[in-house]
Structure formats: C-alpha cells, structure tokens
Image (tube, rainbow, N blue to C red; front, side, top):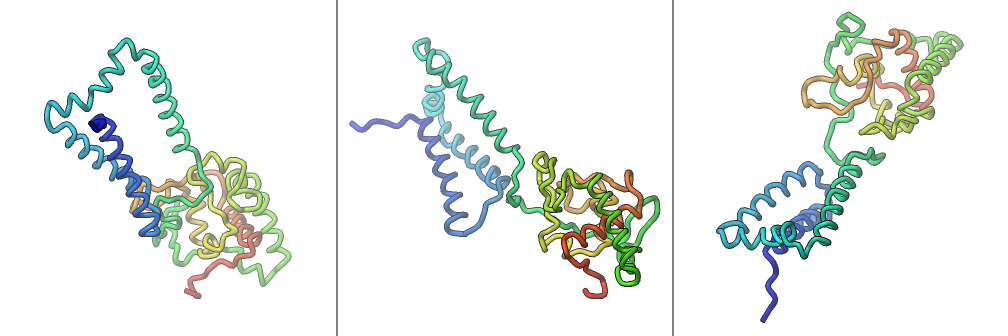
Length: 257
C-alpha cells in the first residue's frame, strides 16, 4: 500500500513548486527579473487559493491542521515542539535582517532615478524657472580660468564638509554613511548620472532634496536633505562646479537638446 503524503506537506509542496515555477519562468524563459513586490503579491493569492482548496470540507481541514495540533498538544512531541519554536522565530528574524540590509547592487524594483523636474520650483523663497536657470559661475570657465579654479576649490571644500559622508570622497556613491542608506547614493562617476543632466536640475535636486520631489509617482525613495536650509545659493552652485570638474563630465545645456 502506497504511503499517503500528509495534507499539510502536500500544501507546502504545491507552494514551493509554484514559487520555483515563477522563478524559472521569469529567469530562464523570459530572461527577466521578477520584482520582489510582484512575486510577493502572486504568492499571496496562490497561498490563499491553495488553502481554500485544501480546506474545502471539514475532513480536509482536520487533516491539514492535524500535524500542527499534534505538535502543539501531544506531550510526546515536546522536544520537536521546542526545536520548532526556536527555529521559526530565528528564521523569521534572519529573513527580516537580510531583507532590510542595504545592497550596493542596482535595485530590482522599478523606480525613476532621475524624476522629471517641474518647470518652476520655489527655491530660497522665490519662484525659479528651471528651464532658464543657469549656473552664474559657469561663464568664468572661459572668461577667467583662475577665478573659476578658485570657485571649484571652494565647491570642493563645501562638498567635503557636507556631502562626502554619503556620496564619497571620490564621488562614487561609496561614502562612510552609504551602507546605511537604501537605496545607496548615486555614483556621479557613472555617465548615466550627472553627465546626462543640466546644472539647473542639480541645483533643484540639491536645494529641495527628497521632500522637494514631485508628487507624481510618489512615494519616492530619497535620503537627500533639503540643502537650501543649510547652504547658500552660491555654495550649491560651487558644489555643482566641483562635481562636473572632478568627474570630467560636461553639463548638458538646453541649447544642445
């Protein structure tokens, strides 16, 4: 006579099979990464469906909960019960720890790294047209290189005092505080960051920080402080000069779009 698989084990095997199936379909067949939030949503509905099927009648419900009831009530299973009661909380704690631990890898969740800026924004108590806003010191790069270099050095000093803790002394997003942020700060050395942006965009993002991001597509993920509360306009413009100078990138301009 064939051994009957316990009903609870059947349900567990079905859930494991479906989970593995999702991974195989996305990773192997579709060659894509399934977002963790989407996978969690799928598994929630699958789990609900599986337990609805396995508890369709009273007999099925009794068979499903029988191993759990025996584990909790049967005196002869005291050792196994104590082991399970230790392992389950430890496993839950480990899963929570690894889920919350910051990662230096590119996020698998789909999010906008460079949100579209508003046409106008209130910065330093005044309404600013970002389409026309320019760095007041940029023209000195050609007109007075010596003074321009002094401004870049001043921007470097402001950056080191305020920004390098997160963005790193090499502007690579690997500062001493970076590991505590999720997501980690952007790597300005990457050609996909400030090299693709206008200086007015950087001024807007630095000045208004995370709270200044547009409400569309919220909630945003940003730990950027509102630097207009701590730095002057000139200091922010000088920091922007330093960012482009150090990385060797040229800021994009509206004329070239």
